[in-house]
Image (tube, rainbow, N blue to C red; front, side, top):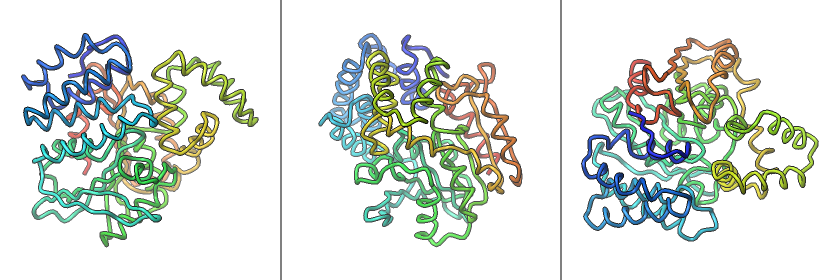
Length: 370
């Protein structure tokens, strides 16, 4: 169940994202949250609070909770903060100490002078393969945890960090829009003839892009719909402000764009996080460069090339992706073999981004589709 813990919209989403789908009935987590919530006032107190409880849970060998708390502690830290990499490493270290849901194998898949880290979850007797990845800020360990909701399906599941994500990003691979490249590399590496793919959050766009140009994909799941990257940057921004920014971007007025956005970032922790994280992911040095890079992340012009079976999941109150994109996406998928759509509302539950707080509802639809 999606709960309102604090007034800050982003804080609230992240608490639900990290906690509610797994720990609503967990007395340890609920006791921790009761103490943590009053302390969450700003980015600094957010970091200190989650770190405090992460260390306590690690010391008591509650590695599953410690991992979640380290991930939350890392969330708002800037790339320049030396604590950021420490939190990430502690997150991964405690995650694997506490992960027992599947038997699994690790892989390092060679890619452009580096590698894509991947974990293959083994399902006895499975004769199909599902590739799973996240988006703008998720790590493959977060996606691994979600796979508990579809355990037992007739698929081996390969979860990986692509360029701009997790360990791949730490190793220098920056976020790209043409996601067919890493997908094709993974298909080749495992010598697969057919795969289905699931992209979460921004991965909803990345999955569509891959399906448009890699025809060994037979089914594509957008968990959630994600038409273009700029939607996430402009959401919660006044329409006229966004229009003015894009006019400046289109005319390559870099200094004006940077000045305007830097002022806006100073007054919005949400926007500051989106742009800072985006610059880290893409390697952009300025907000202007980020906007230019993110413009490439769009379904515009590629929908007609997607001829696979498609599942579109959407939350009515998604704070990153406007629900108004859904009919446009459906219309542009003019050659899809089939389109299955599920919109989640407050009445059904799952109305938030990627069904945070009601994750099992999304995966029930995914299981039916697969």
